Length: 570
Image (cartoon, rainbow, N blue to C red):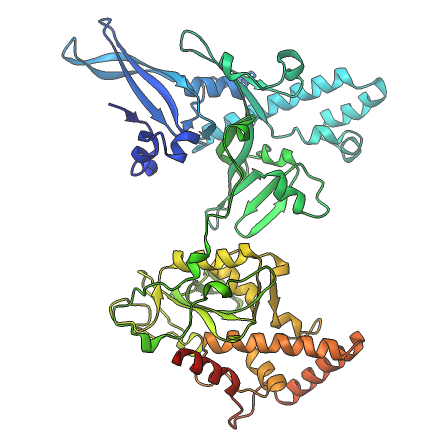
């Protein structure tokens, strides 16, 4: 029977990961090994097992001597410990020696750093200091006498002058982790591990046909670190070495494919930042090493797994929905969007958790925990063709979480709209709607809407800037206030929208009409000053009206309403 040695958090899914050779997770992360239990009576028990990650086991020695990361890793993988275990031969629990031998190394090596106390943190700090001193000694033998004075500055407190003269040394501070490691399976089921540098290739040769000899070179691909913050408990961020195709899309980037992923922030960094750990605020959590030349083993020509069929008609989760309640018409095959097609989009949200704040002694408010918003409705409207202005997506997102505020005045969402038992709306899952939006993004459509940047952030989707046409910014003057969709619709289109509540179909359609108006105004005014005058008039009118739409009933959009009604009648 196969034993799965995985953390508690993995144990629900680990059996499916590792028991099937067809599992992608199993193929990439699973490491096959043997657990041996030797009783003092001489009886030995061997069991096959597999694991998805290894946890570092640190030595007890604190004398400050150099201890390579590779040595600690080998100690952790080929773990040996004394423990009480049942012996079938003795028929009782006996002191046994537990050892672990590797049968097959994984393609991706995942390492849990297990820095949970000052003891482990001090070990990392001590080893980084030792490695830094060794790096200084190494450099002192390579540099000329003219630069040895600069090195002396470095050896003291790292004066600014020394930093300017020898910047490469600064990159080695707080570094113990190697960018590459070499692992070799020996004939007696042992494992050799050593740090690997670019210079080692000259001695051992390139890491190509090494699998035949049981030799593998692993390159660091990602580090997950814990950023300490006593006030909030800190957060996790990741340093990831991305693929060349993504890296090459970034203009003006000179770094070596390493990026910082911090929530919505994705920033290029120098590769040394991925392995520099100042234990006072930046603690390593998880490390990912991948076999060199791994891409040649797998077919990584990724095709879009989302097909156009996601935009076709689908059944609603709502039990009471009828065809008469349909608010949209799914796309036909001849209407499938192409690169550059316009799609009007609007989203509505509800609140799952209220904001938690406290009032300071000086009268200012301090936010302890921000409110949590959840997308409740997403509408997409055709931006061209005979059915222009007609929605093809109008999804209400079913949620199992408790909604504390439906924000009906601003969202148009009412209690019960998201409940499958009583809703009359087209109710669907968040995953289903995500697939539709992801398909539209990947196909290259241009989204037109009002405040899309905030909408996409809450929806948690990254959309390239050149695929977003936001009317908030199209009709905006620098250092001036943002203007509401309602006021823009009244001023430019002579439409009065958002009367009692917001309606996402109306908002998406209005944004499309505003974009058409923007194109019209831009073309009529060949000089930029002409459109500037239009915006200036807009802001002057807004100030006079106090940015409020007049109370009398304004025009609706009879053209689009008539088209929509006639299509529904068909």
